[in-house]
Length: 177
Image 1: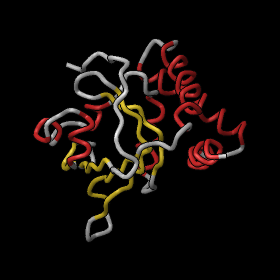
Image 2 (image 1 turned 90 degrees about the vertical axis):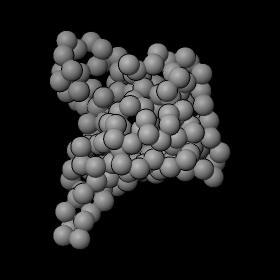
Image 3 (image 1 turned 120 degrees about the vertical axis):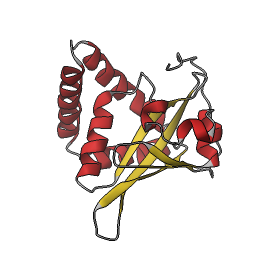
């Protein structure tokens, strides 16, 4: 059973990196010590489970759809992600997810490295995620949720004249400036 969010934020050190690996279906095959500690799960509670075990309910589904679409197209993905720890606390990460390829050049899994977001970036992404989530909550089915919020996200990016990765990196540069 998924824990209820406590509203308490967990953090980790700037130099720490949360690392995990998954198979092609998103089942965790490796979790480093930082992931184990920050998520509050034991390693054996993570390995073999879907990576969505740490999905926070306030995280828009369309961001994960976009992530999977890009990974399936063999592209890397950068995203700000709100995660849910085992006890219901939350933690923000700046994720870099890449496909892992076998000797034959075919994808065999995914590798994710997550850093602590730069100061101020989360404050810039929260309003967008709240808009996307509100759009999802207006829809009667999961598939309509994803479609409606994806359309909204696509529109926001088109209006800004940027691709998703450009948008993500613009948040960090505008927070620093």
